[in-house]
Image (cartoon, rainbow, N blue to C red):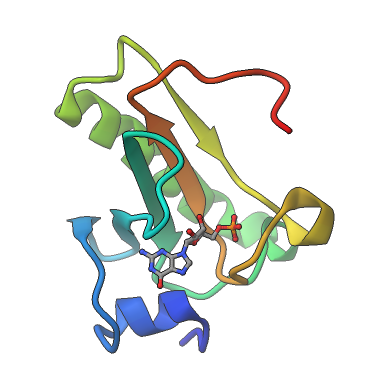
Length: 114
Ligand code: 5GP
């Protein structure tokens, strides 16, 4: 199990505002939200970065994205739009080394990101 902050959230060792959970995926609100909706979707199985993913992780990666899309539909902002982001390693801006997908919504996003 991952020894990062997110591993502790999975094990309920530190609190989080959990909005979705299934056997393989956990989703909780980001503690420092960058949009009115900012949820992190993580695999329960630890994977440090997207760069560590291998072919055998394809189904899990798909499940993470589908969980984001299902959440957006369920919460009613799918049609208006949202953004999913995976930061990878230093230049990607990754700070927690347990793979996570940011789901951001509730405001207009800008491109390119800073
Ligand atoms: P990264 O920069 O690695 O892509 O994103 C890490 C995210 O985790 C950041 O948006 C940060 O606000 C969030 N974060 C860091 N520590 C905690 C925590 O203890 N709880 C929650 N809910 N989010 C956290």
